[in-house]
Amino acid sequence: MEISGYLIDIENAANTIKQQGYKTIAVQVPEGLKRSIFPLVEFLKKETGATVLVSADACFGACDVVNYELKNMDVDCVVHLGHTAISDVENFWISTMFVNAQSTLDVSKVVEKAIPSLVGKKIGLVTTAQHLHTLEKVETILRNHNLEPFIAEGDERISTKGQILGCNFSVGTKIAENVDCFLFIGSGTFHPVGLLMSARKPVIAADPYTNAVKKQEIEDMKNNMLRQRYGAIVACRSARRFGILIGVKRGQQRIKLAREIQQMLDSAGKLSLLITLDEFSPVSLQGFDIDCYVSTACPRIAIDDYLQYKKPMITPVELEIVLGRREWETYVFDEILE
Image (cartoon, rainbow, N blue to C red):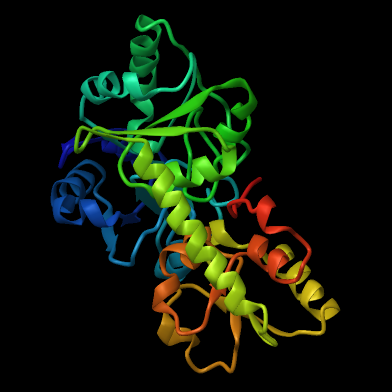
């Protein structure tokens, strides 16, 4: 079914629901598809006869599945729209089907436009879930220009070749030594900036939504981000009381890392609290007498939402720099890997 410029294989999901005999299902939908949810829900109801609940909670990715919350509501299955599966999330409390939303945009024009900006002959190809189906076409375009495309498998959290997440750039880092640059297909700057910082090779971003090609903008964004992060690190060097934030969302839980951080802070003579959160917000943290927060949840929280919080928030990598266990020159992007 085509909805709002995306192809969604809701038909296959309906077949599975019928085969399994599910009576009550929950549909989890990303923000961009909420306005178009009626046709999908009506189709599922008609084809399966099931009761369909629609989750209105914010959905940040495949790491964020409404599962535990619904187990006592007789929900048999969650249909999670717009993302591909990651490990340790599927079939956790309730059976979960990940139904990707494939963009219907033709990427050919913006890829052709990006060719002059590419560096060297060996090009690593990466994208987000919405454009994974276009990579074969992009490969062909590059080969027609006598370029050599590379598409890598990621670690266990990555379900499809060439896919990067905001917290995992393993498909890039695995081939960084074999390519001259990366071509990112998609919108936004966070993913290409994260890849640039992780793989340390030039990244050219081709946005099929705006037909824009970005290269220097990605480098500038990286430099701005590093300046911000350096400021956060400096602000935490005199901190005595630390809050170690643990994400409750199944795909963001790094409890072992949080415990290691607490041991690290204990050794440095610092006080710390292990704090669990499902939904991160300044309001939820304002009551604590804390000098600095270390987030072990989604890496984007400390970076994207940094200015929202009254107290500085850093990543585990940045804490190592604060405590003198890592040099600033070896700064790397925080990732959730296998």
